[in-house]
Length: 254
Length: 262
Image 1 (cartoon, helix red, strand yellow):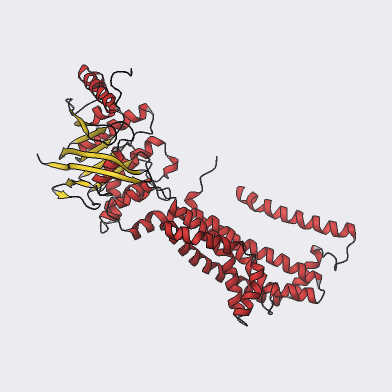
Image 2 (image 1 turned 120 degrees about the vertical axis):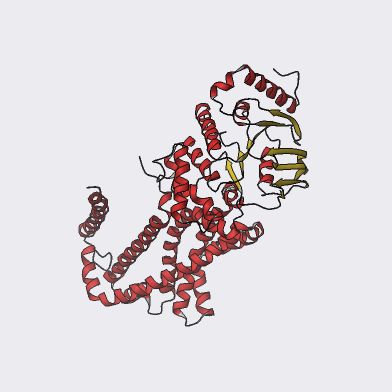
């Protein structure tokens, strides 16, 4: 019963939303070059299904690659900031300043530096836009570790590596996954940013762009929906990982 | 009987912005093997510093700490620690929390043996049936019991406790005193207990050391002259009352307000 409810409620909400959308377009009698309606979407998907699969895959793998890089570098930066005051004082202003730069401005810069390296550019942008939350939360998680937690193992002569592996790392996991949920969305935005601003015929962003060029509005809307679906898939993939690795942090309700 | 813990002329100061803050001044403490030494003193007098020195987590500016005839310069596997905060790891079950020190101290011990050892202790402190729970599912008193099990699971020579019962209500605290007494009867260890509860110090201690205000010196040493199989009832005997009164008097002196305070 609970299981049915869990699935039925969000699915019902999505259906209600699509009906509402269809209704608004129908009532206003908008043509599909002004606002596509949900019923325009299946034909658009059907017509370009091979493109959706191919380009969706390109967007997906480049986002995941960028996110993976962000996890690696973000965690290392976070560890440096969490364990060393000097590293924290040195890196923080740099990171905050870098994070404040609107990433759209970096697209042409990157495209010029690594000219023609489209996959690399896209992965790089996904990484650049998404590593910051991970670095900050890992850094804060490690630096706020209560000394007693360290002392229970340190008093037994445990090495720093052991203390990190048995205490600091698992204790930081909930913060890490909280940041990862933000980062996964950001990485996705980064990928699409490059695909749209600097199109090179790859990814859903490029498909969107070609829809725009050809005045194919249903295609553009279909791409938006595909992006939303991909975003949901990525987000819930992170949630599933969180359940597996940091499920203990979720207190039973009631 | 040899002295298991020997603290000789230990002086220590913390470096702060306002200059050095002396916390221990020529402190001398001896605890014979198997004895239970309770340390009381005004708050902020350096009691916790003392525990960190004995555990080898810090080095004193001057003086020496000896354990088992060896000078302490770094942490040792033969020490167990318990704090006011039970510091249980939420991602582990109670059983796995208790096993933790064995993973460090006895990496080759079979998991079965580790679990048997931990279960034996959990049973002794009345936590049988709770071994599979998460720390957050237990009450404060139960968590502290689990923390006690963890601190002695690897059979340390020395158990160092820093106000372990400080955050518990009065009755739970008395229950835990009795648990502590029973544990000690079953698993002999030498113990240093930092506390600010005088009744606790008399109930559990073989000797009670009163530290002076900061910087702390040994101000008074009281030998607790009560039978080993004490009950809460023992605290209401004239002898215990007399000792408690004497300790209270010493604390008053340590606080530096003799005479004018009621």
